[in-house]
Image (cartoon, rainbow, N blue to C red):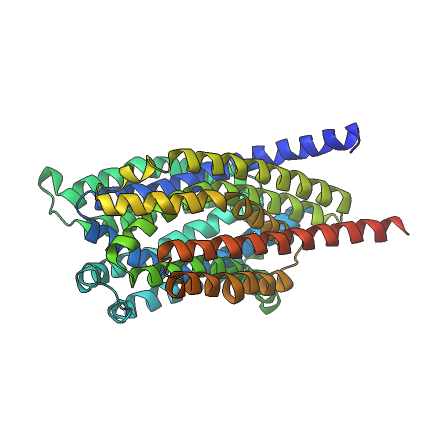
Length: 453
């Protein structure tokens, strides 16, 4: 590789990281809130922790499907912004918000109405009793959270990524304080334990949405992109948004769904195994938020260049982001391997849970590289509006190969939870290879074709 090429990749990596840092911090804060909830509930007893895990696993698939729909807003906004078309940005924003609001209401209603399904998943009866009322509160909190995510995707698509980050940071002490009041019954408040965490989440998410909505609608920074004359619903616009949103939702949903289904399967082994799985998954999900932030930033920058049909720029952004993800994955793998006997202690003191979580963290260390690079690959392909074939490839990696492999290892080879995590490694590695190969093939082909004219 020439010196000029190395300098170009380094510059593009720096630009992507600069854009990604606020997104990453915001994502980490959201994940930190989840981990803090888990730790505060786990401090009561492991049954409460297992109940929280059951609800999170059960609602994770529909929730991430909703998040996938919000991604269409940033993709279409960033492409229009790359063409310096503020009116079209405003039009996509309005239609995207309406679409995501309907999606949020539908998902929330389904989760609240169907919460009794938890009693039919073969889980510990005591865990189910704790989980059902918690599911209702968490289901309701989907609405403000997805509305907040929609506004965040709008601001991120315009490359104003610090707005949502600041709000997320401000929300952390609010959520912790509400948990302290409601989980443990401090300052005369009722001791609600797991339900207290649910109320804290619902209130915090509602406040985050309201504040961001006021900023977007009133702040002068966003005034050029909030043109009410462009706020009209169009079938063609919804078709464009759904063309990105549905495959994106399926992509994210299939990955999260594989983890969620695995968590429910692990719960049939024992509540100890489920609690250990939740601890290891919480840690792995925390590091994954950095990869997601890089993927979103890379996707936004690629989409912006795609709006200008600049394929050399797309290629440089993509390759530099992949190299950054590779370095990050190696760093996380080393960290998990070194801290696997330390991290579980922050969640629960039960000796059996601790020992199993320590083992699962070693598996989490192994898949850090493929987890980071597959997220980047999917994001880059979304940036060039290539979403249908990647959706099929992800389905094959996770559901045709990864999940069945984990099930066979867990129950036919008696590896238990460790077998399911070996299935994670298989699925993530295949997804990474599939997606990265496709992005490199497309960008190389487009550059060659453009050079031939």
